[in-house]
Image (tube, rainbow, N blue to C red):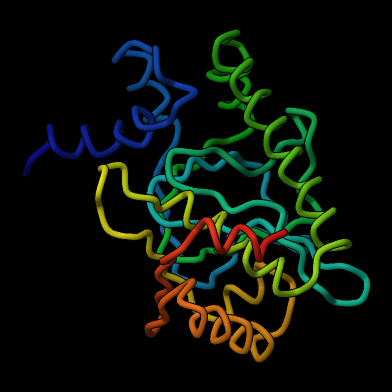
Length: 233
């Protein structure tokens, strides 16, 4: 058995997270030991209002959508979490998630940390707690923007905004690399934009006819982000 490989795999979850960037190897090992890995399948809920979870998640692989459901049954996406980011039970950090759902957009791997270990390893370290506060502040700003978009933007504008947000997260780092690709279904895009699958498919086909995007099964390629930004308002 490759114990060194197993240990490196455990610690990877911690070393790839920005808030832990200047910890020593021993400190990372201690946090990794307190945060065992767990997997979820595409579409599976990590938590919901009926099943709240008193833990902090560190996302290792895949993407997670945080959303709320309004009184009229409309889902509002609060955040799309990418690998190397924390989310979860934030009541101890000044944010509640009891009215939120967390859904795996892909097959997801997370490291899970208990409330006691969050206090012990994270909140007790001034460097880490300050970075957590910064992350949550940015997320709150993003949520306010999404709430504003859901009220004031048309459906095509919301879909264009959603595509640009997702493309920014998948944009290739290398100059001259291929256009960003979004690996989501029309149903998932609809959920993110707060509209129906039928309307989303119609708008996406319209965007494709204008050569703003290219459609394939379960995949959307953004061809003209600047022109798409005009459609996003």
